[in-house]
Image (cartoon, rainbow, N blue to C red; front, side, top):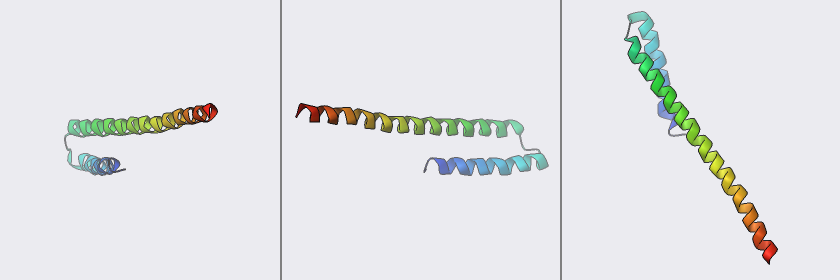
Length: 74
C-alpha cells in the first residue's frame, strides 16, 4: 500500500497538469512521458502483487502435503 500512495499522488498531479495543458499549452510530450512512467509503475506493482499472492498460494499448497506425509509416516 505504501508503494501505491506516491503513484496515486502522481496520477492526481498528472490530471491537474493535463487540465493546465488544455488551458495553457504545457508540453504534451512531457505529460505523455509521465503518463507512460506512471502506467509502467502501476504494472510493476500489479505484477509484484501477483507474484506475492502466487508465492503465498504456493507456500500453502506445499505445506499441506509435507504435513500430511509426516502424519502418514507416524
